[in-house]
Amino acid sequence: MEYVVASLILLAVLLVGAVGLVVPRLRRRELPPPAGSVPGDDRAGTTTLERPPAVPEAETLPPLIERPAEPAAPTAPAVETPEPTAGRLVRLRARLSRSQNVFGRGLLSVLSRDHLDDDAWEEIEDSLISADVGVEATQVLVERLRERVRVLGTRTVAEVRAQLAEELTAALEPELDRSLHTAPHEGRPAVVLVVGVNGAGKTTTCGKIARVLVADGRTVLLGAADTFRAAAAEQLATWGERVGAETVRGPEGGDPASVAFDAVKRGIDVGVDTVLVDTAGRLQNKVGLMDELGKVKRVVEKHGPVDETLLILDATTGQNGLEQARVFTEVVDVTGVVLTKLDGTAKGGIVIAVQNKLGIPVKLVGLGEGPDDLAPFEPAAFVEALLGTDA
Image 1 (cartoon, rainbow, N blue to C red):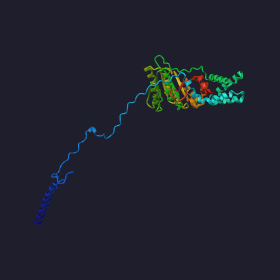
Image 2 (tube, rainbow, N blue to C red):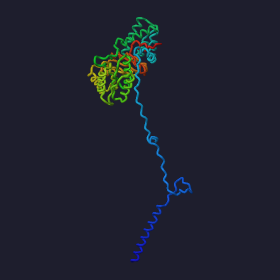
Image 3 (tube, rainbow, N blue to C red):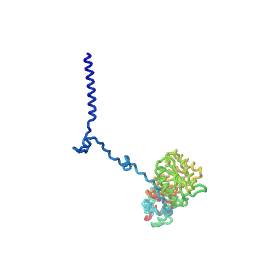
Image 4 (cartoon, rainbow, N blue to C red):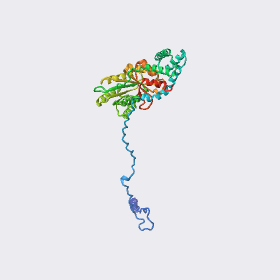
């Protein structure tokens, strides 16, 4: 038994010794010759360490992430000089006459007949009503024309045209005050509120009114009190920048009355002539919204009375514009109408209807999409365009 144990111990010692001899030999095994060594070279088979390639200078390394170029600082738009308002309607007459020629020619062709019977006068009535003159105003106008034709017995186209022009001009009440009350008061600017329904192009027209005021020599500040439509304040500010007018705006969804109040206060501080306040579009049948519009006016009047409240009416809405005007007048006491898109409708008689029904003067008319296509309303020039120059 002792012999077996001694044998096992001797075997273990021999194994440990063998491992000790083998492992160093394995560690001393030569490394393979470096790449590129030539066979037969006396250095072949020796271990060499190659120097790693030089790292390029840091500034020559391409960036891991391309940084976008710094955006150029926005440049302020050049301040424009709006076209003078004097004579604008005359210059824009061709645009109006193109859409109204059918109306003018139709009336003159009937009135120039040798014999005007009841059917002919009924045809004249239909033409006036279709042009949105309104039933009541049409009846008065036709009655006056019938009397003139009966008494004077005129029949030539030129004579009939002159009579018709006189009656239409009279129906437009040329004696009404159509001036914009924008002169500053002692210590504070004049305040103009711009109101209207959704979709009438109110903010755009408000910007054009600013150009009208600047063209007439007023310094203007804009109040972006339409806080419900996201783009309204930005749109108005763009219009203001074009003529060098500052725009006071508030947070989106903020209190419109607060913005209007701040705009007038700012106008007092900087000493401008006129503060023009754009309000949010209203539906005339929404009582809550109309009440809020009344609040805007009351808050603004803490600085002093509102000088003008201009109602923007889309001429293409026709007789519906009368209902809009009536409700707005009850809420904020409209002092004047701005009638837009007259170049796109053959219903220019809405001017007569508004004044006949409500006694509110039309002060400005829009005859195109250009920035200066808003003109002071002149009854005689309007009638000339209404009848057409070649009628």
